[in-house]
Amino acid sequence: MNEIVSVVQSIILFIPALIANSGAVITGGHFIIDRGKKFIDGRRILGNGKTLSGYAGGIAIGTVTGFIIYLISTLFNYALGTYGTLAEAIIIPFIMATGSLTGDIAGSFVKRRIGIDRGGKGGLLDQWPFALMAFLFLYIFERPFFMYHYFYVTMIVILVIVPPIHRAVNIIGYKMHKKDVPW
Image 1: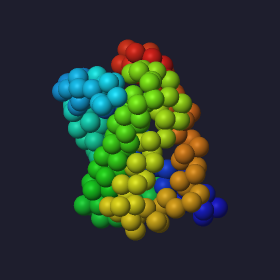
Image 2: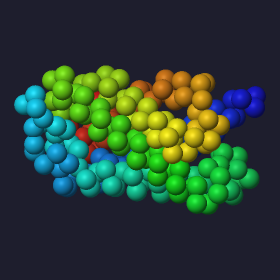
Image 3: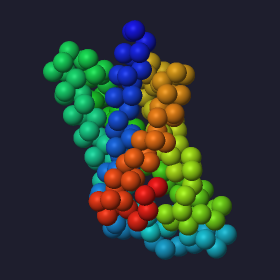
Image 4: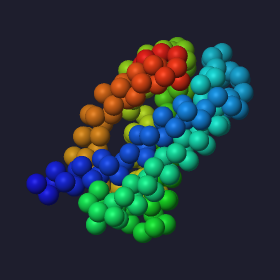
């Protein structure tokens, strides 16, 4: 039972990485990152969907979400898990959100290289890069936190639940007219 609680807490603590992408959609649209430039293969580097306003806004929303999780968890004697100190409750969600959006950008870069245009279906290439890069950023910048929460089982569980969550959020974004396609 303790292991199940630990996995659930770790998933809750990972929400800033998950919500950062939605935050980027909500705040995006201004200051296109690649400024319309093409890579050496003649294709756009990233495309119009990757903007500085989305990147910064997504990071901010992810960071604030993590801090809110920390505050709620402290009210319930850390039942939701904890990032550690008050400073870590800002730093760790910031790292996760930054990694998440960097992974999303990396996924777009790869999609452009293999000929998938903006909005085109990329399968797991749309869904896993942000989670994997969030894990990598945690491993690099907050290794003790990563090793405690995301080594083996929890990482696998998150990678399994990300595709259906990602799909559901994209459908909601599409119905809200925030996304051009429901995937």
